[in-house]
Image (cartoon, rainbow, N blue to C red):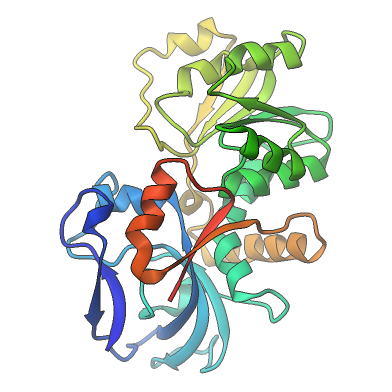
Length: 323
């Protein structure tokens, strides 16, 4: 038997109960993985609440690192004892699991399990945001919401290394100091300042080239006012609720703006694209361009506490569940 968090009904963090589960032997094209570290991400909350649909009951979690302990028929890329990391499919909140081998990524020996679980989803997200959605260039200016969060700290480091000016919103002075220490040039405490006014002040009234927003409903419309003419609004999450644009004319009135709603699956659904992005991510980690900031560690049995802290913006950097 193995321990896993099993969700039987959608709801608050209290639905995250730990149970004994039977882990089957891997079938054709599958591997069995023993987890060493599990990444906590806001997408886990979306599945728990039912915003993202999946059949009940289910084991949440998209990201983890561990060891291959068994391989099914037809698996050629992995062998027992290999170190792997992955982002999807759901089912990571467990001591062990069976998963498709083609979703796993070899974890280099010089990158720890914790670094892998802390960085893969968030690092790949930062990679596509800064290199694919808008190929950021030296001299450009961005606004990144939740700059002290898991994706935010990685993105601030990476954007700073590219040579961009980084403006970040945070919810406390402590988070402002953390963001500043990780490449954020201007921090805005949204609890004390109007971020639109501050962005306009910092940019001399011009606005930023790109806004990266994972907050959603609470920040979307004000974020449009932070953009320069023909700037890009990147809405890549909805922590405070889904975003809708009832009138596209708003984009015209605010300066012929562009809006996109990217996802990691939209960029890396094909394995060659995923492996190439992971290679770029690991390279940036080795070179010191980006470094994981692990702010919290919880036991697997404390998944409810961990998700509650994430939802209430009490976390910084990456959060791990340790089986």
